Length: 118
Image (cartoon, rainbow, N blue to C red; front, side, top):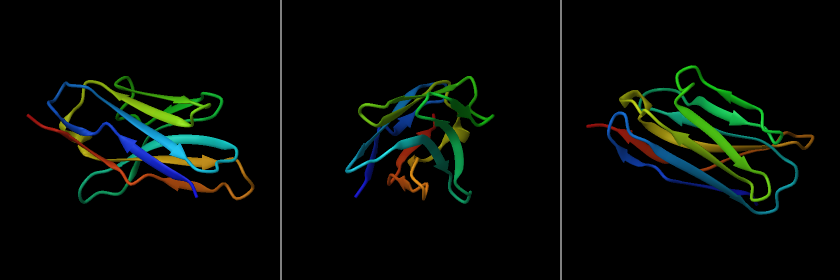
């Protein structure tokens, strides 16, 4: 069984920074894409950023230049450094891991709340 555990959420003022971390545990074969998604109240879950096992990064337009994703392939962890936070970044942030197996199985964390407010 694969488990993803997020940490690092909290309350921050506009313009502030937070760093989210996600650690995967269990029997994990061929970890491939890792990423962060978020879901605000009343909205659908949306992609924030992803990073492949080779280090290729992708960002949603809304976070480009403010957020940075990184990963440690040996530890199977993924971080999200969030700078210049805005109230519209408020959401529950979820970590996702997709394997490079034939089924392209995916796993999700339970989420961590990020609130940007003065």
